[in-house]
Image (cartoon, rainbow, N blue to C red; front, side, top):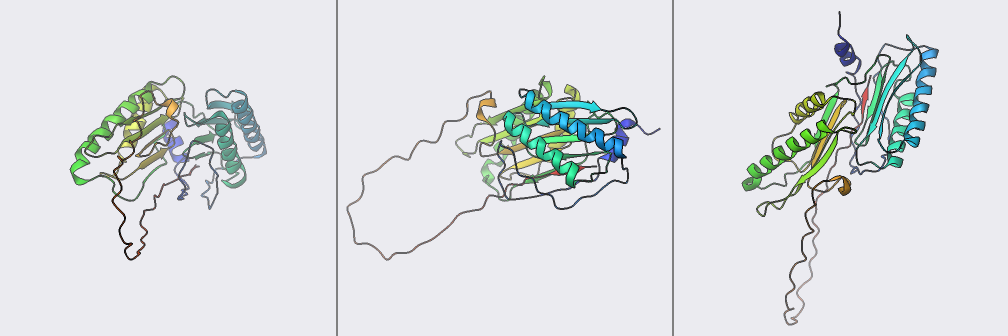
Length: 300
């Protein structure tokens, strides 16, 4: 007999990935849709009505219960019963959480295989999954995706220190997220040593219905997707957990339990030299483009 975990794994294999160059924030993101892969398992009119009723209930619940950012419920009777789980990033404001989940429901119903019995949308800000079988408390390892920014911002002499600090930071975040009682969400940072000047900001989160053990395992497996040292930033998005690090602060600092590093002091002023004849004028323009990967996954 095929196990429930394996059946769920098979139902979640197909995915859609969208990559843009927009830096994500902890506000609701815009969604766009390019193409889709649909499973052959379709539902009838009763299942469709139950799915729509469940999503309506979800949105009402998120608006009414704004303190947790987590939703798990079901609607209907077997064989047309629908189960759903929705949760937002732990530092997302209630209004942004509601907007993100509303966009996800619209994406699923209108564009993403409206006849599929298993589906979902995951983004940097929220995750929504539904199925015709119970999915609560089940760790799902696929699909998943990871991405990183181009460019190496760590000098060769600082790479060992960077890797050590990154490993220590994620181990701390893994323990804190897994032990979380409500959102299983943790953020933190590793202050920059004088040698590198790079502060690392990190995030780890699991689906809040997972056990402490399953959350810890999910994050550990996600960390195996870390690229070789030392890309500027990295993100991992899975069905049951997500990870991210960046040299720039990207989360709400109020959720960080340790004080953030102070801003760099302004450069010391020196007396101006006496005026001299103006040299021939030349102009130059230099700079780099930071590419942040924004990912949407579609589960079927």
